[in-house]
Each structure stands twice: as structure tokens, then as C-alpha cells.
Image (cartoon, rainbow, N blue to C red):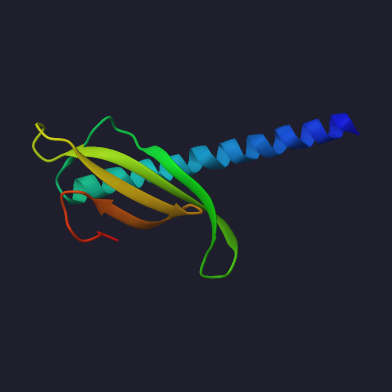
Amino acid sequence: MTDLMIFLLFGVGFLYWISAIRCKDVAIWAARRECRLNDVQLLDHTVYQVWLSLKRDSNDDWRVWRRYKFDYSIDGQDRYSGELVLLGRQVVRVRMESFSPPIH
């Protein structure tokens, strides 16, 4: 019985890890797209997760709510911060520091 619980725990952990990698790939893609659309440079070519929680989506289903940050530069001399919010694997908001209103 204990072996079964350990196996299930590792299985759930592995599935979460795979899901987290896929969500980070979506966040990187979205950050690159927004930087390209706004003619700025994505610094470090990556995003980093700063928040994780559960929230209901529009269908009233529970989804993982992830918030990522990324850095970008307008002219190569400065450094600004951007933020992405994913609900499940769907990008629900992108905000870039140098642009006042949210882009999405």
C-alpha cells in the first residue's frame, strides 16, 4: 500500500512538472510575440514564474493561475519589466512596463 502511494505521488509530481514546462513554453512564446509586436528586445530570452495559485475559468472549472515576469529593452541600454498571466495554458494578460495600458 505504501509503495502504491509513493508511486502515485511521483506520478502526480511528474505530470505537474510536464505541465509546468509546457506552460513556461507558452509564456516564452507569448513574451517573444509581444516584444516583436512592440519592436523591443526580449532580454535573456526567457521568463520566470513569480506566482502560482488556483482560480476558476469562465466555464467554472479549476485551472492553475501562473504569473510570469520577463525583461526587455527598447534600445539595448535600458531594462524594463513585463508580466504575463496564464490561466491553464491560455494567456489572459500581458503587461509591459514602458507601455501604460495592458496589451491584452
